[in-house]
Amino acid sequence: MHTIPLSSQMEKTIWLLVAILGLVLLSLGRVEGRKSRILDESSSTSSYDLEYSAISCRAHSASITDFGGVGDGKTLNTKAFQEAVNQLSQYASDGGSQLLVPAGQWLTGSFNLTSHFTLFLHKDAVLLASQEINEWAVIDPLPSYGHGRDAAGGRYISLLFGTNLTDVIITGENGTIDGQGELWWLKFHSKKLKYTRPCLIEIMHSDNIQISNLTLVNSPSWNIHPVYSSNIIVQGITILAPIKSPNTDGINPDSCTNMRIEDNYIVSGDDCVAVKSGWDEYGINYGMPTSQLIIRRLTCISPYSAAIALGSEMSGGIQDVRADDITAINTESGVRIKTGVGRGGFVKDVYVKGMTLHTMKWVFWMTGNYGQHADTHWDPNALPEIKGINYRDVVAVNVSMAARLEGISGDPFTGICISNVTISMAKKAKKYPWTCTDVEGITSGVQPPPCELLPDQGPEKVEMCTFPTESLAIDNIEMQRCSYRLNY
Image (cartoon, rainbow, N blue to C red; front, top):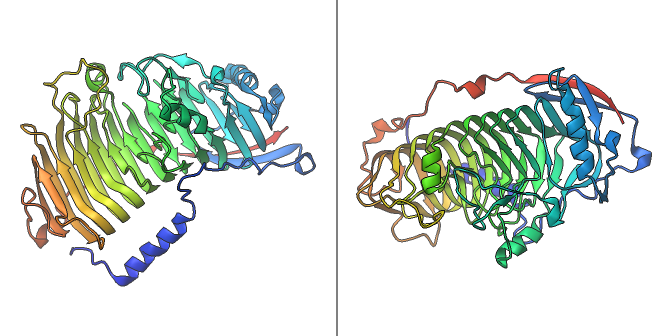
């Protein structure tokens, strides 16, 4: 194999992709949900045929209207949703249950999910997060973090929350969950938050989770946050947030094992996917890594952050991450590893191939001086291990700087392999396309030529950077085709 040539046709294709995707980039304003897409009574029917793919089908179904829900955008439905989940939980051992959210605007505060349960959003359904702060309970900080990220105390519970569950599905026909996050963003910027902002979806200590075919907009903070969980599929999700909204990460697997993130489109004010495993001494003590993670067919727009970030909260460790077919447009970096003294933990066995990037500040970025700490008790002797990082088959155009690779003095990042990479620099690119300190590795077929710390092994080694061929268990989960006729 030879280095990928950047043909004029390829560049035209990438520019066309930029033009198409740019239509959805709402640069500063609030992202509008689908509040106007409501079916009036004359267009409603008494039955609804439903068919979708899922890890489990359900024996029992109901509509939120059966529990007094009103989709007028004004009536608060928190009690209706929680009552529905509580009632349907009785079927957990009898084939499971499903709750349909029909067309409408369904204003609600946070509610808890249950096991063997599906929440399904009609294509014209909008879950509207309540802007009444008292609708959001305050829960304890995550034990692997020690305290909240916005404030030292607890954190507001997520809009959709579950803990110690199994077999949970949140899906739909691309229905919308609108976090109405502007209120929270203003409180964050004005430093008026007593507790950390809520996520849209957070699932803890759980197994067999599917989140699919939804549109998430205007999250107060992180959008999807599975934590201390396993066997998770996040598929076909559209996430939209203003590009200057604070910490609106797209999908954040956190101390999770066996997870598949695929076919997602994200416009964000922070990292599109951020892989985590705890913060400083709390993450080290909790000791639960994120591992066996697949990220494929991701499209990202995030001018101030990364398409894929590993860290900075990585103190429990991150291992065996496989990313393939990644597209990033107008994004700060393609892949970024964030860590620092005091983090401890490790990031190793990372495999990335098939990235198509346009208008980037950096293609590759590794940071060993990330300085945000949970508190003053972090251990200065807790050094992270960054090892076995593989990048291959990358095409990038209009790039300011090819790579910024900064390890830690006395604790270099090792085993870096970069091959078959063609980077076209921007007209006003930095004078030196590569900067490297405290790193060790090799390269082959990389243009522009990398730094001396990553010596070229010759064109015959262009396929040397590995990508595992054996499948992970999460790829072997079989999806079922579920069909229903619902009356409401």
